[in-house]
Amino acid sequence: MGCRLRIFLTEAEKQTLETLRRSAQVPQRTKDRAQVLLLNARGLKNEQIAQGMNWAISTVRLTIHRWQKMGLAGLWDAQGRGGKPRYTESDMIYLERCLEQEQSTYTSKQLAAKLAQERQVYLSPDRLRRVLKKREGI
Image (cartoon, rainbow, N blue to C red; front, side, top):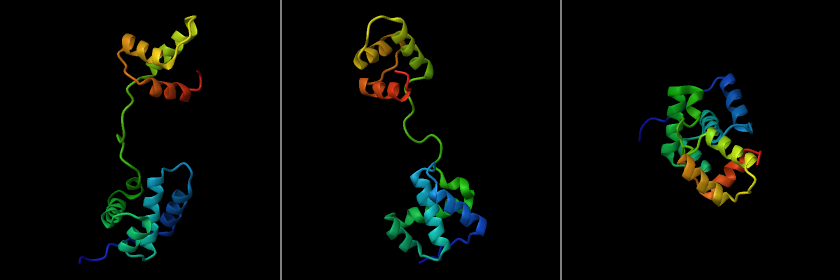
């Protein structure tokens, strides 16, 4: 068994981590990482933290190592995670103009087909409906 991985936080760091942990604007994964650091600094063993958070011990250690290497920036996920949008803002503006200028009404299936045919952007009707709803104009 190796040496115990433990961090020591200043009062300012503790306060910052507590604020992050309670913030509504911070992603849940970041809040969990802040909680892990606080628990480690209070003296809990990594095995206890892993069990309480329902994480693997390696994940707890990784979080602590990221804190040691990167500081506060290590708590957030790296950019580029998740799927990239298959459409651009200009595609949505094009659809909005079509809806405003043309007299006929469209279903989401027809709009998806129009987007695919004229702009080579392939979205499912359901996805297109959610995107347009999110834009709050349609």
